[in-house]
Amino acid sequence: MVATTTGNKEPHRILLVSVPRTASNLLLKVLNIPNQPNVLASPKGGYFFYDAFMAATRDNRLNKTLDQWNAEVKSETKAVVQKCFDRLEEYSARARAENKIMFTKEHAFWLVNPCFFTNNDGTTPEDHREFQVSVPECYGASATFSAKNKTIMPDEYLRTWRIAFIIRHPALAWPSMYRAMQKLSKAGFIDDDGMRGASFTNMSMEWTRMLFDWCREQPDESVTPLVIDANDVIHNPGAVVKFCEKAGLDTSFMQFEWSGAEKKSEDWAAGSANADTPEEVAFHKTAASIMLSTLEESTGVVKDKAPASVDIDAEVAKWRVEFGDEVAELIEKATRDSMPDYEYLKASRVTV
Image (tube, rainbow, N blue to C red; front, top):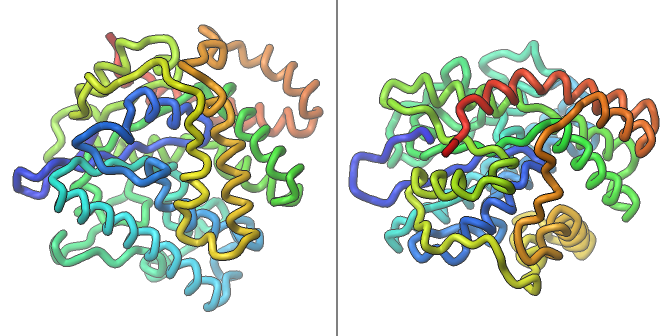
């Protein structure tokens, strides 16, 4: 957790930074975020910047350098990014008015300034400012971006959040993500290029680690930011309780079993700012049902989703059978490339 308050006694704000398929929705279920009486969260539990990510990935933009984005594309992307930020701030204002903790969960990659995507290494400071959000005056006049802050939000704003992180072994997270993208492809919502692009773009803990290190460098931060591993969410209830306590949430509302009747995917579909057409609503609903399928069908924590130990070589052999050699090799590379970041973050996880 990073972040400082705004200098008053208002409840703090929690930003949980994740990557896809790290059991972050399960963590919110166990923490019982919707029913925490002193917490305000969106129907999705966050994901305010989902639409910004979708805008940045449209028309294969992630595979193009920034100088290949015309003025209209840049303007459209910036407008969606700002709209997402403004919705987040609307919820924050509501939380302050209701004297509640503001809680949101966002994927690290979705917060990154498009200038820093893989193929945009040659951008200039002027390019960086193209997508940086306009922050309300209540956060001060300064808007600085230190070296490890690759997000669309300035240092001064990020410091007003208590930032926490959830991670998962890449050999479990990355194939799970690819399976989810395959299902979207089979449902006709994305083509093969889009499936691979969305999958492999997100298969990284680089941005999570960078933001984690940013947190540790803040001058007013005296403790290591909160980190929880998905394996502990599933197998180590004590670690989740400790995480809950350190985040300032109420442990008495935590749950490890629940009714399987609740369908959060409906809330997800209704909660997207850019779902303006029947096709977009159908996409969001299908995507939510795929991403939440295990959770919605469960009545408690499903322990077989997280083996006690992971043998990458053995997993690669399974991927070759399931996905074919080409995709298996891509997932293997993403996994091995991610392991140093994962192990680095894991060393700081909450333990009991």
